[in-house]
Image: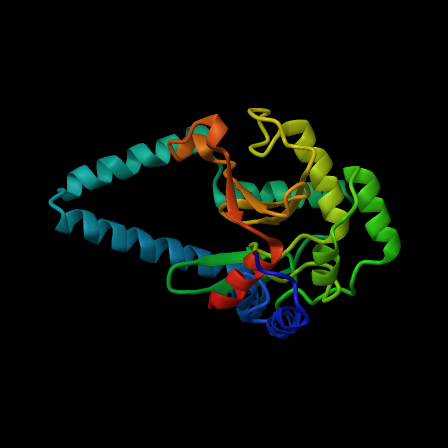
Length: 257
């Protein structure tokens, strides 16, 4: 079984120090730029128009007539209007919520566009900086919330920083978030629907397409699939062994680009 050695920790720390490789979406965050809201809306409109034209060209190449395409397009618009929300509606809801909270209107946001993706965020541009390692008080509070002692390999790993690096869309969870998330999972389960129980020995580590949990009883890393019902799984198959140890999970992360 892989161990959290000094050599492994040094390699993890080196990659964590790279803002473009710190966590899964770090490179995208580094590519973000701050733009006025109106400019971002214009770029979203251009993106939508380009994709609509590409979809139309693809449909016609596949044999659909222009009339059929327009009919399908209108049906989809009616469904969206009936059951969904448009981007402008979502923006209006966000503005209303900020006003209710007493926050000033957003005038700028961070924005990124790639060949296959476009997004805007209220987070500032750039990868999230690493935080200082958790304090002894933070570890103690986590242990009280979970009802278990934290293992040495986890504490050694978090001597690099309080999460924000490693597996996960935004890296490993900060210690304070682990406690809150654990309490929530114990109430609602890994799919947040109460389908199956969240074991008392599990500690939530990171969120990806699959979520990762440290099994404090065995030292293994367990994955859970919150969308099990869309992946043709039975409820009892929500959990699976992802890695034999925390060190093995981090070694796997280091091997990935």
